Length: 355
Image (cartoon, rainbow, N blue to C red; front, side, top):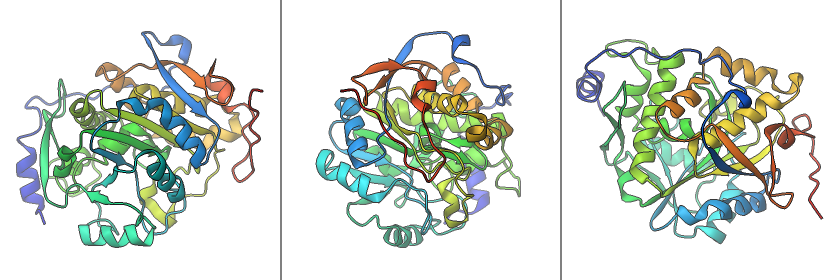
């Protein structure tokens, strides 16, 4: 166990010497027609099932080679909103039989704070059908943060270095501090180790408040952590976001998560992390007022849109995209078309396939 003093002493070596200034406008949404740059390919299906997950994985699987980790949020005990285990089990059995789920311990003291507690929670939640590597159980490793303004290096779970490829399989939802949790949050927080790396992201050095960093600065720190992981894997990383059971709460909140009020949408996938998260945010904004108002308030009040603009500034991807509709013969659609016909949470959406 690391003491707080030891953590802060180690962090001094990893942060920039010049005090950075956070960006601004993290509470302002940029419409598609006001964006510039290239377009990345993003795939979309409304099919929220194991079959839909496998179908969309097929479109981005070419980059996944060798020993592969699947980074997903396995949840607190009995959490109601995590990606269904049967979907993941079927994906792994049919498409990724040698892959390993990868996780790290938490910064807060809960059911996944220590490796022993984490193992018990995995059993309770049913993640027993495959290996789960708690990557910081044997220590940490440093990854460089290229052109970062908050960090020069990020502390991650040491076992991350054992993998040749990474599939980032994310439950897209709200987040109490991050505003929304997409692929960026999944690996920015989720690959940082539970004591040093997560502390570097969340806590002002010497503060007694472990959550003392917020808004644009927090979004930038998360993004720089993510960049270290994305750069490490290079071309051997891919991103899937599952837009289902989108509570305003992160899966870290378990059974205390706020009730879901946002309609289910579908699954998106890309080789571009920014495009993957951007299209999910665009789909939320494209919904009707009553469908999206709570999640938009959560995103804007936390200034979480800075995640997207900072990924763009850091050269991590494109915020423009071609959205390929797998349900309709690969037609190119926009975010509004993707959410056309969504129904209140708990109801079944009818999917109309091209004949």
